[in-house]
Amino acid sequence: MTKVASTVTDSAGKVEGQNNYMRSIIIIGALFFIFGFVTWLNSVLIPYLKIACQLNDFQSYLVAFAFYISYLVMAIPSAWVLKKTGFKNGMSVGLLIMSVGAAVFIPAAMTRVYELFLLGLFVQGTGLAVLQTASNPYVTILGPIESAAKRISIMGIFNKVAGALAPIVLGAIVLSNADALVDSLGAMSAAEKAAELDALAAKVIAPYLVIVAVLIVLAVLIYFSSLPEVDTDKEDETVAAANTNKKSILQFPHLLMGAFALFLYVGVEVMAGDTIISYAAYGQGIPFTEAKFFTSITLIAMIVGYLIGIAAIPKYIKQEKALQISAILGVLFSLSAILTDGYVSVLSIALLGLANALMWPAIWPLALANLGRFTKIGSSLLIMGIAGGAILPLIYGALSDAFSAQQAYWLMVPCYLFILYYAVAGYKVRS
Image (cartoon, rainbow, N blue to C red):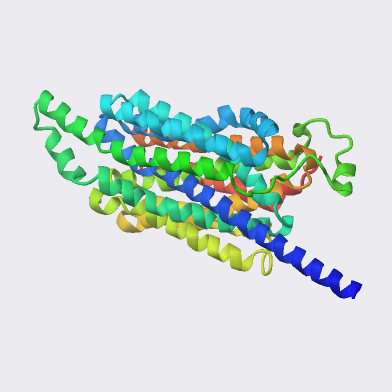
């Protein structure tokens, strides 16, 4: 009887453990949905603010710069916040900070002051820095490290479904009649032009009020949720022994190169998603009525990549091999975008979504391997790598103004080549 009772107890414990695991995955999945929705609104904000605030290419890509540079500035403070709050409460803090940033869009739209829009984007990015510093390592260490890329791929589907919806929703609101407005601005008087641009700017007020409300509600729900805390300060014996002589995060070269690979990956991912609407409209002459859908196509391609990752990793392919294949595809699609024209060129940029899909899921576990008590600070270093989304699109914008939007995509090729090196050899370097 004792043996049977023990077996029943063990079975009940396993079921409860599985239920807690699935509940945690769903909650974190909701957070990744929010990441994607807020992040990929930028692809519409860039051409929208270019019109509303009368900007050139370089100035318009300050949207991406203001949003992503916050990851570089705030990543280390985010690690300090998590030290005090833990992962779970840190997620709530991040959501509340994001709501403040979204709220800044209201006075920005009312005054049509570009600097206020940029401030709102920076604050939103700050909240996401806290949120991502907590959630990404949480997903990585919630289960076996060898299946981490699969779990992050699942999160990526939540993220990119939201990302595919975001530009369609916001684009339908703020870019409706954009082609006609751009064509007519030149014939308007200064007063008429100001009135039309003020009306255009006001279109973002309602959607951002909704975003503020959703973020606050989600912050409260996360705070009172049953999401378990994970203690990364307690290492297993093997990791603890390997880290005995490690005093600094700078003593993990595989992490440092992983952070740089992540910097380049985020840069090319943001370039693919955030430049494609402007490239299609201004670089290839495709109307805004069609161009506004291309970011969604890019993100749908990423979803396909994530589904492949979920099915194949680690059963058929290791995460480092997936990263190698992804980098090679990145080089090929980049060259196709540069060497072709029209819809083929634009769709080559969209297909970079497929190439980029498994890079984030693969780089994180490879870079965080065997960090033990250094996991939180290592995670914050990787989050700093997201600043690639600030720097590379800005360089792209400058190259686009100096040469052409198409030739500026040459910037992508060396980025994918370094990621290929990391996938082949860089992640193995331990000293």
